[in-house]
Length: 151
Image (cartoon, rainbow, N blue to C red; front, side, top):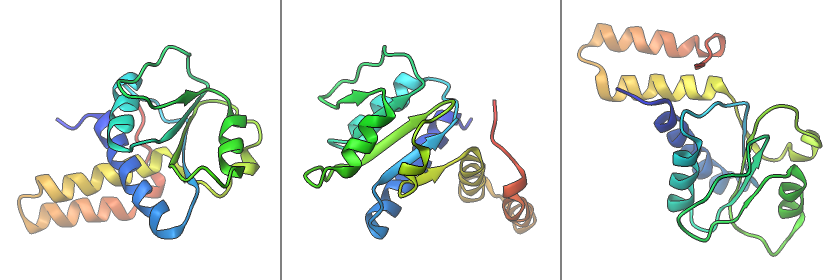
């Protein structure tokens, strides 16, 4: 069974690679509900060393295993963005209204449709048994902008 949090992590890792190739500042996940936020945050902190993580709209009860710093204000993301000495990845998990959203437009934006797209990529890659099934998943993937991966 594919878990939503695993799909979220795959999207984050894919988008981090994109930011490195395209000199973007970081990624911003918009209103994406995690099943186990603590698991996702710890996995990101483990895999993406020295990441700057912003949890806007989340409770202040997240602890990570390593020295990753977690902030809860969008202003911290803006500060990181404007600091030339900061070269680490900035990852924003945003829930609800986000002040200064326009100042974060240089971040790669991630929405539920990105999760849907990744889920279908995983289905095609791991679970396709024949050409007809593959064609079905590919057709569905082409229509992904109309489908949301929600709870």
